Length: 155
Image (cartoon, rainbow, N blue to C red; front, side):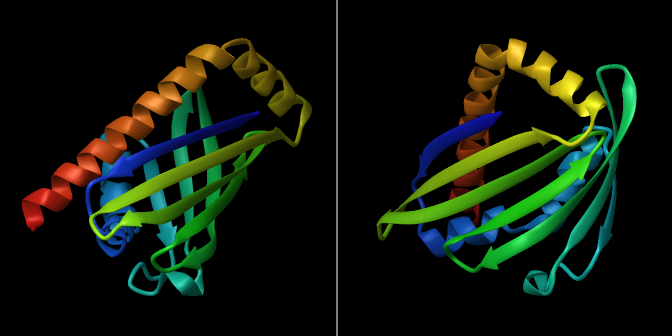
């Protein structure tokens, strides 16, 4: 199952990359959503590899996942892979400078089942594909808007 989305942000590409690679801020955001996060690695040097162990409730069950920063290309993007509870995923984030003050944020997420339980979970997600696609795009637009607002307030 794949999700794709693009959003334009009114800020230079380097500033946008700095905002999306603020891993400590993302960890705090996850904690506010009742997701337990344990990081391994130094966020000041993410190119050496970061991992996160997550514990969260989804559809009435406690789930666990491990995320790995698989590729880190300063200013242009990053790739995060992960798996847990029968699902494996890969998320690619790419930044493209449209102009000196405008950046396109492109996100691609792919989920695959690795167990029978994962297949059942993925099948139930596929039944709600339209709703999930809409929510993914809304969430990406919201994230881009928050990032743009945060960058404007620090400028």
